[in-house]
Image (cartoon, rainbow, N blue to C red; front, side, top):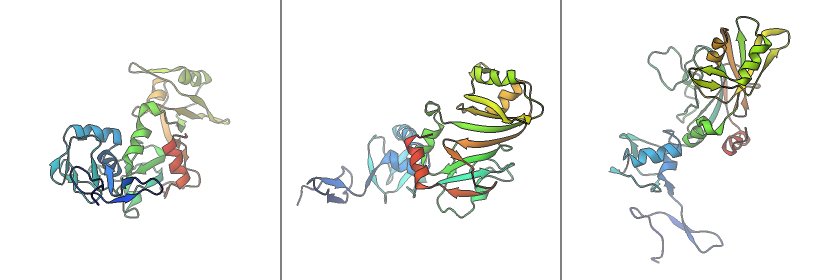
Length: 263
């Protein structure tokens, strides 16, 4: 029968959708989704690089949004072949002195050294923790989810345990919540409190800002030096029962929570 639907550039595997009488593509995926699954970027960012003509499919540039490819197609970004791998999600309790990057020729240790070859898929960190900061770090090859978690409008919640060089006065906790001027930007904490009632050099701070080194800069502006910084919460994830330097795969429930934005 010739009423089988085909893509305008290649034949697709087609089957009847149960109970509908309609045919559906069984082997095609939108190009932006394929790119995001390969770990290059988010789906929204994939649309941009498609429009710029930086993607080729089987040797030919593609600039059409909504274009569909087979998983067996040769899809390349800047001549580097992409692969729509199985999506994986890893929670890591980052130790001190590890750089949050996939590779750095100037770094002695990166967080990828902790994963090693135990995860066959190529994952990358979502956001950054600076070299001396410890705690909760998410790694994945789901570019679409990574884009959502790092976009400012989604206001992902983060909580840090901060160890300072001296006692923090209560007035400065109020200042953090009211807003501190950092080079023209007013950064406000959602909450700031003493982490240990018997040690007022320790503060717990909750905020949504994704600015670089924002916690350290906030306290430096108030006249304190951060001796130790530990992220204890990120977008609903905690390091509970996860020793420093160890990692685990997220549960299906945790992945669904992240995708639904319940954090």
